[in-house]
Amino acid sequence: MNHLKQQYLPCISVANMRESDRLTIEKYVSGRTLMYRAALGVYRAVDWHGDIAIAVGGGNNGGDGYALACILKRNHHNCRIVKLSDKLTEDSAYFAEAAQSLGVSMTPYTIGAFSKADIVVDCLLGTGFQGELREPFLSAVNEINISRAQVVSVDINSGMNGDTGVALTAVQSDITVTIGYVKRGLISKNAARCMKKLVVADIGIVLDKEEQKIVPASENAGVNDPALISAPAYLQLEPIDVSRAELFTDLGGI
Image (cartoon, rainbow, N blue to C red; front, side, top):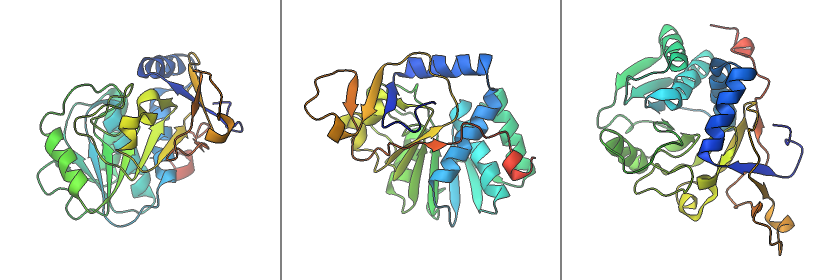
């Protein structure tokens, strides 16, 4: 992102995010490095303590959780993986193997998995999710929502539509760290009921096309421009900049 010093954030569709991610990997940065940066952005957004349960699904959203486990473990935090899927992308498998080699505990999800956690990290479902949650995801999300833990959602609250914010059931987070750019659904009225704080982790994804800009509410007062959106109170306008981080160099490698 080149807008870090400016008082606005791009707001984009899920399709634009997906294409921007694809083009960045094709032309500039490996998917593995982007996944590591995403996890590093989450790591820097939270005051980690106690028992940390990382709930992972399949695909790249789960991969962010495995990468986060590596960073937490190397920084001497007590973390564990709770798996709801064994389907992994190539990059996700890399970090899953790395986390296992570091001694991170990995267990399949069962009822009660989050009952003693101080922090639960939601890496279950990504921005492409639509429809209703199915088991075991529905049970896991309900259990996360009644736990006493601090809840951190990665990229989006699982169960939420990334373009509309609509969700029949979704993770209720204390903080959501969205990756790359703000997706439309995250600043909708629907989403506002599911999170207390929203932060962007700038991982160096080159935007394919500009859509809308989120600006401070004070700068958008009385302005009738559909391209400008007033920042909701729960959105932190300054991103966490991990756009130049290299794979594990700051942690001594794996």
